[in-house]
Image (cartoon, rainbow, N blue to C red; front, side, top):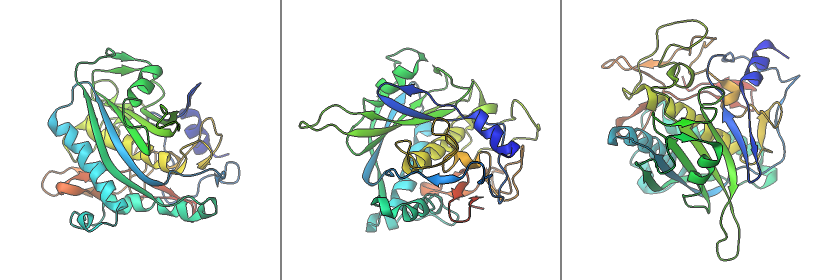
Length: 330
């Protein structure tokens, strides 16, 4: 086992609930190397035979706490950019973004579906669904894992990914200490006598609590090389960090929704499509350096993907199951 793989495995943790399986995005600080194979001899990145997320699925957003309109639009434009890349409708073609794009990044997920075709996992088509607002903190400002599951259950529960976003002044059990977000599955309430499982994601805004852990490289890390942070493309360290973690968790949700899809390592602490490439955003990445990314000539902000409405984002590299390397967009 390489020391890099071991460090990543030590960073990742998961918690099991009686009604859900949860997989986490670890705090930042230790990275894999871009363009280099992982230690696939000791811990092969494998397909474990289970279904991938497939079909027409809506992404429903549960906003917990205070988010201003600008912060919401950062997330909404990102989801819309992914939705358009998943759809073949004529309306989606009108919002195609310049290369490199969010669409290009998300379409790399199709490599996993091609390799899993024997499991009859059809292509995943995502669309933006409903939004639920809870600006008055109905469950308080200190949440447990159970609170997150309760919030996730407020969204649509059939053919859905319910995304819980917690505001910067909300603490969540384990947030900043061993996780920046998590994804899992829950059993929904019966619908016409049938029960459905739905996927959920939770991501916290780390702006005032731990930006060095959950919003790197837009903030100096708590440990390791103290290189100057990159300027966030949407001028919001916390929310640009949310996008990195949300993108990471969406990739894991699609390719390992039930814990028996694509991952490396143990089922209890899996390295998934994006977490296998933690900290890699461009070519030449190494610990403390995110890699060669693009820089906006006007603002000086760093990014590697163009989105809808002129947005720019910094998105994590995805593991390429064909070449067994981490493949950043740029």
